[in-house]
Image (tube, rainbow, N blue to C red):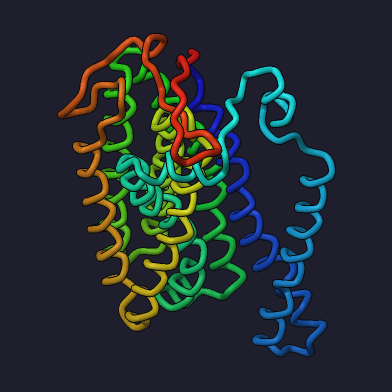
Length: 317
């Protein structure tokens, strides 16, 4: 009932780091490093990246040393108690990878989280070139995009949960489609802005839909394959960086025309929203196909360690 909101809040607060990094690096640390490097702007901007690298490294060590494997505890304990089926990593990945819904969500996540990563990278230079701002000022404005994660991604997940109460999976898919289509429209409008204040306002609205779509995506992910949820989540999550790379290449090919790059990105996002028509998850009614079934009675084939052997286990609610 709350899977969308929970995933959205956790992911959103994690992504707040994007906005914090923009603000701290561009507005606080960059001026300091300019002093340290005797005014060498290029050297200062390159060396300041050592700070988030060190923070990331320390955080990784803390995760390894102090965190559990999942919200329910450690995998080895869950397997002993029978709450988690024994499935090999290869079989789990195969279960998620062969589902077409996984790859449609992969594309859609590329069009929301991938867009966020792209904007985090491109926003500073865009505002510097378009409105002739200083790096410090442009970084402060660009940080708005990341800070919307404080609530926007959670709101997207919450909206997915609320729609699910009335329309079940169709509600989640409708929220997903709506957020992606609105996101694409906002990108088109943002690309046409010639006024700084209006551009900042549009950036803020645009970011809410981007991060809301991220939350709604992970409101759907846990239902795609109940035996291989980790594989599905991992593949879909990889769509974000993949989208960032693809959109980044578009911006790189159009260095003198970032507005056109934004328009191309907007068109792709709109197309991904229309793709929601074809999402069809087993046991759930989609927008065009399928029907709702009692999930307690569905027998789920579990791929065992032996790739040639299938074991049927009863799905647990």
